[in-house]
Image (cartoon, rainbow, N blue to C red; front, side, top):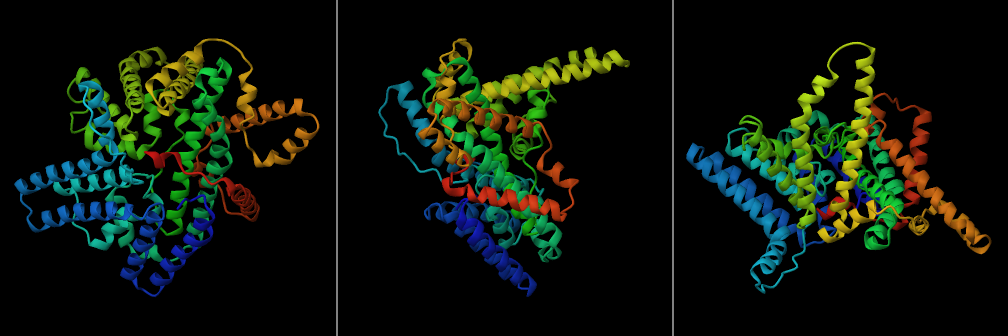
Length: 502
């Protein structure tokens, strides 16, 4: 079930909210939790009922480890359970996500002929595995208590963050489910939840989905692209991916607020970043937090010298790339970012010395330097995302050639014609029957306007910043209503979220 679908918006969500508040209002707290767990499992099983076995087995495995530690709380036993928990969780994830990737590469290197299983990847397995892995690690290290089963199942299965995150920690979510004061209906919190959800829906439907056909055309016709169209498509994909994923996260945060639950932000204006290192403090923040806490710091972090810091950084970003998908393009994308972050660390001292000091000249220099650094960072992220989107390393390298060959074949008009804006449907029909020569220029103008709006929004305030200073006045509520109706009317071409693939 998708957030951007009629069945979710007009059936599932009202039923889930109604049942949750009705049962809590009658002080049937455990029954309310059971109802929410049941609705969340329905939400998950809607995609494929066979996925239920995977997530329930995963929950049973990890809760069983916690229960075993509770009953036998010795240091040696906790260490044994820690190893078992990591091996089992990563083993399940590895089997579903990386088995074919491993066999395919082994066949290529060793000239063997093992059959691929073409295993269907359960939705959200990367997210709920990492979420439970963080709990198991904390539990075995003595940094977490043993929770009641219903609290734990609410933590794992809570449907807003189940499929594509954010990766929420047990200490963030479970205390909220245990707090009965959060179960009372709060009209203000509910209204802000609707606003968050509406902004996220608009990001997905009106921006990301409209750019998707352009991006799809570009990455399936790489050799035919000229320089301008290649750059436009690279920019389009960066904007599409950001609004698709941040739109999902905004909807998740909004739904959480409707239930009285605070879900952490996953983005904080990442394209304002003046370095790749800063970018990763603002982009997919809950994933970065997981790798920092459970991989980077245990490896030694930055405490063991510059060379070890670089090695640890590269290990984290290599794993981050692999986490996104079983393809060398993702690994290479992660390595590119690892190199950039390491270089940022090495040049940080030079930048501090260059920009240090007072006076008008230094202030101007700092502003100019930051703007230039923001532009360079944005260009790097756009180029790196080419490999993230490409089906193979060969496609990614070929795309790099198209970016730099400096040729113009007017392919940009064909690219622009891929736009399928419902707002321009009647205009395109009229022009098709009358002045067909103008049609391509209309679509090109629409693409430029769409990209301009995208760049303007990613450089502007975040959803949290926009709503923090907003009062839900009548005027603002009418604007939200128009945006919501506009988005719902555009749901005819319902599309899945990009991060469902990861």
